[in-house]
Image 1 (cartoon, helix red, strand yellow):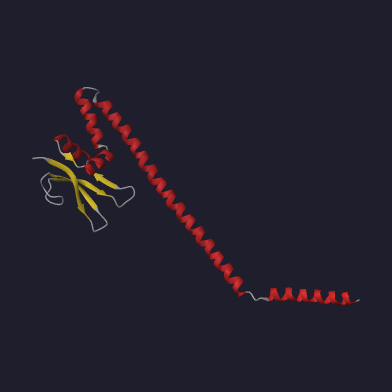
Image 2 (tube, helix red, strand yellow):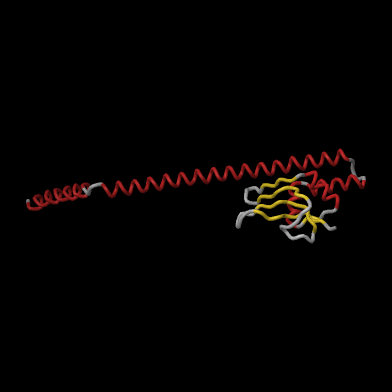
Length: 177
């Protein structure tokens, strides 16, 4: 029986959620499956992937073929890299301790990338909130200034007119003399 590691869709319309399963290649997408390996939630940023690493690696070693999307998920979690390293051990290219050391180094690098992405997303959301609050405060100040300008009496204009009238009246007697 040809087995596939693939995604089984759950969730409502527009909000997908997937189970990563091993199924017979002839079974329908959301139909009968052999074993559930984990879950994948693309709605979060970064996407949430929960897999049973050992079960998935075991199925890969038994010959289960992942679909394209499942292959990307398995690669992201390091299962394909671990299988690759095990193949190198079987061929005698290096021993088990070297393979484990390489995999641990890869895992640390991957964790650093994920944590830096999460920090960048948190910082950008904090900056956008700060910018939105600053824009809102400026808009409120502009509105308050417009209301003050609208509600002030036009007394300033009257004072200017009276001062110009008194200057013109002073000039007329001087011109007559």
